Length: 176
Image 1: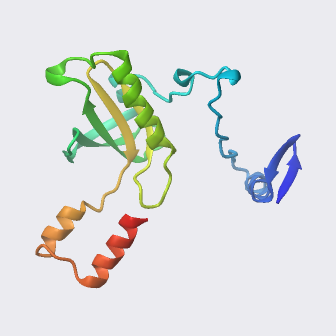
Image 2: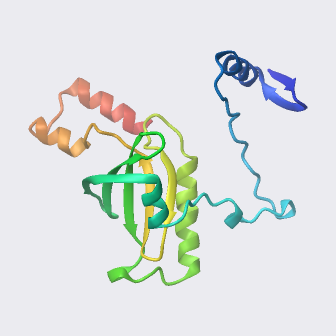
């Protein structure tokens, strides 16, 4: 149901969560509301982009701890957030060939639309993209750090095959 609190309409669960947070003396943030993309609202896409800066700003926020691996789009490094101590994975995606910048603002726009869409995905079986940084040569995506290894590594450890019950669990997670 909906409850009125502070002039806005919130779910009963949101009101209860805020009350619990207040009783425990901790901050509680109401989930963000989705902005409708409609020309009459005067909201431009570039106003919604959640980019935190470039490589220098990333290094001011995170201690880069070392390489985790390479993927199809670039390299992945482990990092620790300086304020919270949380571990994160930073994917570095080169944005041009041989160090050249992305050739047009239109290409950046297409890439950033995809990154913004990734930031909206929240599911237990999808790695969470928390924030991103960009400069002329690269896009740096700060993601949830998963220390369990890859499916490929697990398959190698098991001789190329998973036992049927374990394979069923992995397949169910992938399908979700």
